Length: 314
Image 1 (cartoon, helix red, strand yellow):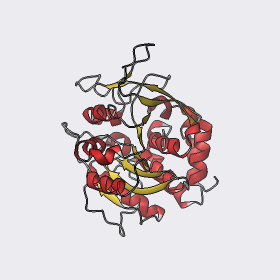
Image 2 (cartoon, rainbow, N blue to C red):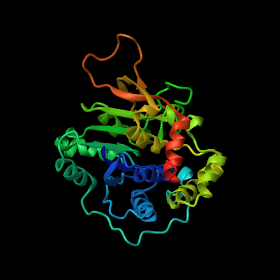
Image 3 (cartoon, rainbow, N blue to C red):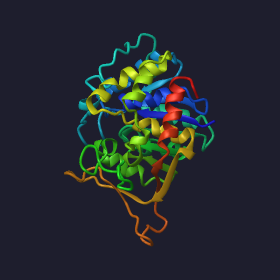
Image 4 (cartoon, rainbow, N blue to C red):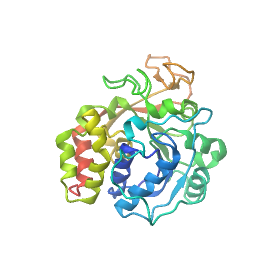
């Protein structure tokens, strides 16, 4: 059973990722950390508590992390996730849970150091700021991770691998490219689940699939339906980006991956946050870091997993 820590900027798709993880007996969730991204940290952290209380899982510890990128000012995605980050969904405010007072880096470090090396997988589904701080401030703990499975990037490896902030840049990487650039140089296994697969229509929630959530008798499904309703209304589809990163840890056979050296563009302008893979034969960096990049998803099987777990049918 993989032991995991979720690091999230909880907005719409992060919420569904939490719900999937909670309903997956393959995973042991050791804690959740919040980072600014889809919304300000105050909201993303509060949203973790809202989702956990709605799911009745108040035993999971939650810590707050970075309120801003490493060197930049924060820029949220409120136009997608709404002012509160949960699309204005009527999910009650938390009344039972409080935050662990440790900063996210100490929280993660303490958990990792209390386990054997290679036991814990870190799943960051927001900007990589907390992860970069972990590398800078607690490298010994970071090095003990089994792997990092992140949601981020647009690698131009599939027809869907274009940006969602600029033509080439995905939000999580664009929001803090310096943090992402540090992470992809790390010497531990890293897998990136990017827009190349998360925007594949075969793995997205269309109106018919959304209706099955909203009409379900299961509270997890109803919460997921409420939270994602605004995105569906605005865009006509709900791309479940972050839940795909969780799904890869649950069942790697849902995805195909290829391994490449990856460069993150940190300069300003239209290429900020671009994720570049070098696909040329014979041009890979000798001995340099490479990461696994998801290049295909079995969309129907992913949806079967997600919707089945949320409605307790799988």
